[in-house]
Image (cartoon, rainbow, N blue to C red):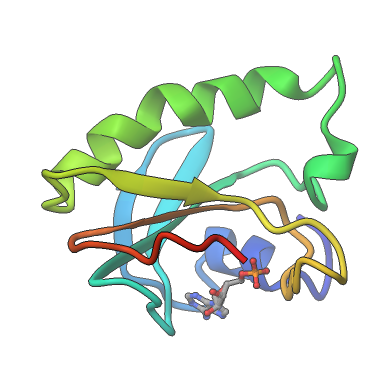
Amino acid sequence: MVENCLFCKIIAGVIPSKKAYEDEKILAFYDIAPQAPVHILVIPKTHIACVDEINEANADIVAYIFTKIPAIAKAAGITNGYRVISNCGADACQSVPHLHFHILGGGELSDKMA
Ligand code: AMP
């Protein structure tokens, strides 16, 4: 757990969240300010700051997250497609420096990504 990391605090239960899925490696929870009818964040329980910090030593958790995303989306009621986004750094407006993947779905999304 990294001190002062919002998502590490959510993992620890210090800050509450509405959980969508949890196991020993990852947590999925509903975004507090949804930007789609269904908006879920999927995070590794190990602290990785952003995509820039993915490397050969920690890439397994990223692959693991992607094996879980389809079932997380389906269990949340997404039936007709979804978007997965990870913002990295200032220009991408990353606001929480703990790697997370946004699952956006539950309705037709914009055809623009930026
Ligand atoms: P990003 O801007 O890509 O770093 O995404 C961070 C996301 O975390 C934003 O979509 C926020 O709405 C979301 N968020 C911030 N605080 C919380 C919280 N306490 N519970 C759930 N989602 C949060």
